[in-house]
Length: 280
Image 1 (cartoon, helix red, strand yellow):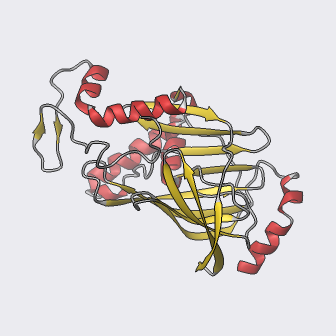
Image 2: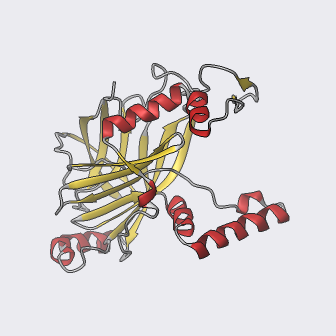
């Protein structure tokens, strides 16, 4: 499989011109992030990257499945039926639940990246030009899934990142927003280790790189405004929820089941912050 994938990408530029809207590779990642309530627990989500030389999409397949169902009347009915049957059968684990909330869609010909996510009860998206990366490549190497990977470091939007990329798959792509290296990024860790991405598998694919389902439900904003909105919700979730619902009787319970009557159930930014910290 390793030789087949490597051979595929030796001619990726020529085939991308023929099938720009179809991916050539699918990469599975485990995305690690901290528990925003205490900053300690290591939580994970499963994401995939589908990409060719010009286009890519990074997303949670389970979240996309749920969004795809909710994008049509028949799909909504199917989702409600699945949920109802799970309740009636006492099989709550059968209910599809989102696993990861954001989408990152990139286009090199258009020189743009689209980011979709929520900030509390609100859903936002923003567009920005592709980042101009300044990676420092070292002599350190290690093997990941049978591929020799090289270490590289950079500063990106407030955090220092260490990445491991493989020139054996010469595709300029990676998890989340990370890219800009002469090879696929297989692993990446932010300084401190609270945020990191680890490749768990990769394969050839011809899946179409589809637009984001329910994209019209996201309000357009800019990156800094989005990050501030997300941080504001974490700092005052009860106020945000009551303002949204217009119901002063809404209460929130902390992780111990106690009602929160003021303040926040989330840790302050001095203990745990967003993956991008340059909004301050």
